[in-house]
Image (tube, rainbow, N blue to C red; front, side, top):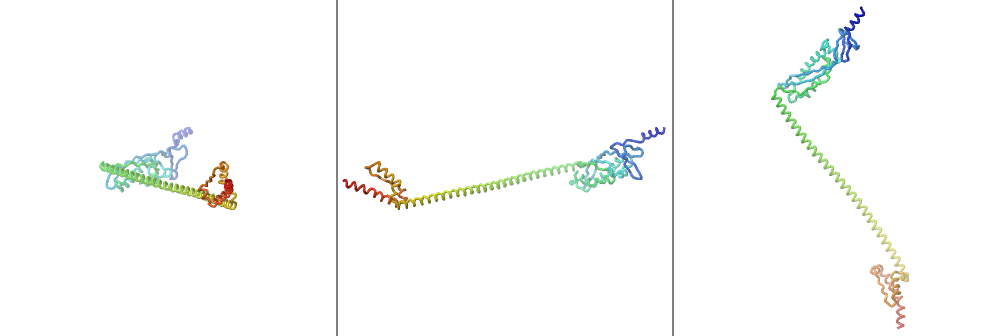
Length: 318
């Protein structure tokens, strides 16, 4: 019977801890987390680990007493590091996270209002509000035991439609001005790019012209050296020819009988053999005469000596 009562008590009192639950109990004035899979429900506090979302509509006022509406979306969850702060702000009950989130919501609204009251409507934006809140959300853990998972600030709205329309027109004009400025900057950048390209092309063309000039100069120098070599070879050849002719002339001058072996004498002999009764005419070209008049004189004297005996014989026969 006692065992049955114990079993009934265990079944009635103990519960299975789910993965998304945090089970707490108090021990010696301190809050401790139960890590066992089963826990006594009347001696424990069960808190959900799920994320709790907040939707805030803040009615604020900017500098100059212009009313604005700001919408915030904040997601929070309990902070394992600051469980005692969560219990103090939310109480010892299963709705501790929701209660602490409501307290945190009130603080967020006061932070937003404090920020907007110091800003001009032209300076106010969702970005500036978000940056200001990002530096203040640390109080969620220190005071409320909550961890901010995400936060979103939507664009604010003006309560007065006339002011809202004026702001829209101003924003439209600013966007058009920025667009025109960007277009002009794009044109300037394109023109600068074109000028840089033209300059680089001009530099490349100038470099190419210099290279062509250097190649032409090298080619001309090569041709000049070749021509100079040809002239030197020609002069050397003519000098050798002249030395040879001088030696030949000296030999004929010392030995006149060798004139018979010259081409002119050979032509004379051939003509005398073919035409016995004809006069043989030996023609010396101007080139031959101009080469050496002394050689011509020697040759003429030799011919006179050869033809003189034949004339004497003819005269005696007559």
